[in-house]
Every structure is written in structure tokens, then in C-alpha cells.
Amino acid sequence: MAAGFKTVEPLEYYRRFLKENCRPDGRELGEFRATTVNLGSITTADGSALVKLGNTTVICGIKAEFSAPPVDATNKGYIVPDVDLPPLCSARFRPGPPGEEAQAVSQFIADVIENSQIIMKEDLCIVNGKLAWVLYCDIICLDYDGNILDACTFALLAALKNVQLPAVAINEETGLAEVNLKQKTPLNIRKYPVATSFAIFDDTLLIVDPTAEEEDLATGTVTIVTDEEGRLCSVHKPGGSPLTGAKLQDCITRAITRHKEVKQLMDKVIKSIKTQ
Image (cartoon, rainbow, N blue to C red; front, side, top):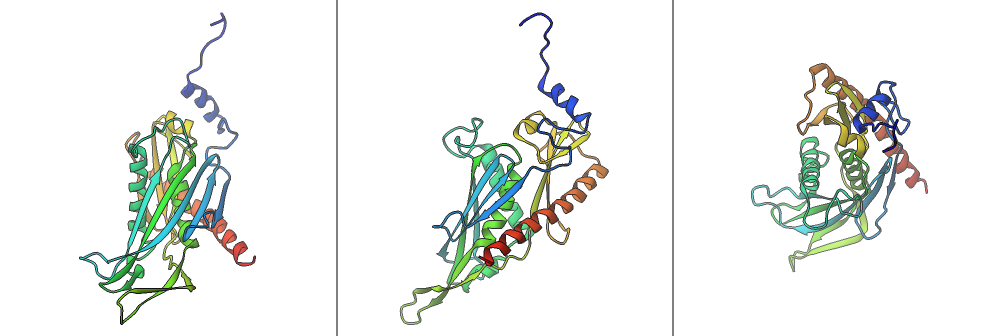
């Protein structure tokens, strides 16, 4: 290297920005990236949504199928989430079976569905003990640039809002299900869970909506999931720097504010579709 030039470690480079309450992409520490959502992106699915959070792009397609209800819960249906992080979305992921990160995100989404009660599984029962809906929620990352949990949670919620299920009746003579595709009804979405993620720098500094590079440099991350009533649905913190009670409360307060922004965006998109 030429004399007079010094290499700057990536973390030190970020610290210089953070001291000025600024980030390399121009955002303030508490500023989210631009967020967009499109509904009905997959015409062959029963419901779908495409969400962009900065450069992070995910798409969720939902397919509804018939199944027998669980033996131990004959009046319930199923919601089966699966998150795919293919090599196409980032060089950090390799071909083959789902890696640890994809499995962790899938489990996070499953926990959000269960804890928030976004849909009551009883609403997916068609005939008690005989027939129920299974909602396969496939979430695929098309472009990865950090904060995958927020993007996947938003895409799931938007796709579920887009689902229209046909009317189903059991033929008494044949015992088979008869589907009326002309008569469809939306899902009964009971809660609106929204995830808000933070990266922790130097054990004390919090930034919202981290990029992939910021996640790699951070000393920890935490994701807060709240619903429209400000109720805490989940706190996801996979190790890293600990948070004080005051810092955690700050995260929850910011998450509640972020929820209102996402809800307004969702309502605006749904309203624009209805008026078309």
C-alpha cells in the first residue's frame, strides 16, 4: 500500500458516522428505509404480497389446501410458514437444504403467528373433525440487504390480508367437499403483528432497520413485535450485547410508533385496490 495511507476498519468507519447521528446511506439512527408493498403479485396463489424494505425484497405466496383437522384439535386448521433464503438473493447463502438463518427466520415467523394470534386456527375449520384449511405460507427473499425479519413479517401479514377462500360444503351423499369458486370470503385477520428490528453498536447505541453490513458490524440485534393495540407479541434477541430495561422500553416505544406507520401503509394499499 502506498505510504501515507491507512486502512480503516469497517467498524471504526461506522463509528465516525454514528457519532454524527448519521449512517453511510444518509439515514439518521432512528430512520427507516423506504417501504413499499404490492398485493396480489402471484396470480396463481390464493393470496400474495411483495414487500420492499430498502433493498431487501421478499415475496410471500399463500396456497390453501384441504386437510383433516389435527386429532387433538378437531375444530382447528393449520398455518404452515416456510422462509427461503436462496443464493439468488445474496452471496452469503449457499445452495442446498435450508441453512441455519432460513430455519431461524421460519421459526420466528411461526412464533409470531402463534403469539400474536393473527388468525385463530378455529377460523380455518370447515367441518369439525372432518375438514379444515391448511395455509401454506411460502416466503422467498429475492434481494437480501438486512432486516429480513421485519420484511418477512410484513409480507406475511399483507399476503394474508390478500387471501380469498372459496365457500366449501360437504355433499351429504358422496361425503366429498364441493367448492364454490364464485363465492369467496377474506380471512378473518384478528391481529396486525408488525416487527421492528434494531442493531446494537458498542453495547449501547441503537439503530433501527439495519442493512446487511450494519448487522455484520453490530454487537447484537433485537426485534420487537407489537400489534395494533400496542400489545407486545414477541421479543426476539439472538444473543449479543445485553439490553438494559430502559433501552428495551425505548425499543418497544419505537416499535409501537413504527406499527402505526406500517398499518397506515397497509390500509392505503388495500383502499387503493378496492377503489380500482
